[in-house]
Length: 253
Image (spheres, rainbow, N blue to C red):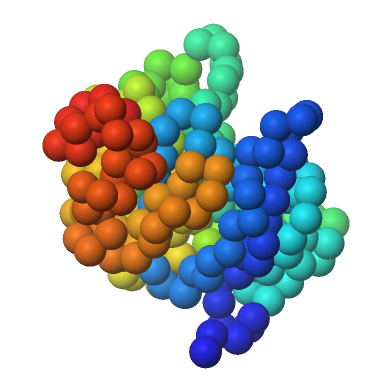
């Protein structure tokens, strides 16, 4: 039996109303530390709502969320240890920050003073090296490709120690090469740093290759477990609807 303290994320009977619409209906699950879990389901299934409710970005209607044993009311103490990469991060193409300057925004304050310039530069350089982007340190972020910018966001998450990384369709709009590079980096960092990863994904092939667990969501949690066991024809038709061929779900969704 997993205790509250042993679970990286514990969700119990979580329901969320968006207006009069029940977006999430009594969701319960545990995430074990150091695991990579994907949430799959059709558009409107409540995937992003679940992510945002867990992080306290939107209010829950009922239920409980614990992150490393802390409720959302006490989450500020842990927030520095949580990385979040959203589906969209809008900014104008003329945004003046360089890649290094942007990543440097993640360097934490020490008391009332920023850490030394040398330590800050070292932290930024190390983070960019880990995502293979040090050569772009002086480039304006508005000039990056979609895949490069998502790796910059990953570097931002690397500047300070993280325990949980949450991704909400982070690779939407990224080409296949960018997806493959990002997935390889995630797998490496998970092993090296012991991250717990929770992501929303539409790519079932990637889920099968990269994830330890998968949650099949359509307002309710309909199935969960190891991808190779859980992503059956029966479960996929239940989640996405019987009108879609499971073999085409990767293309359709």
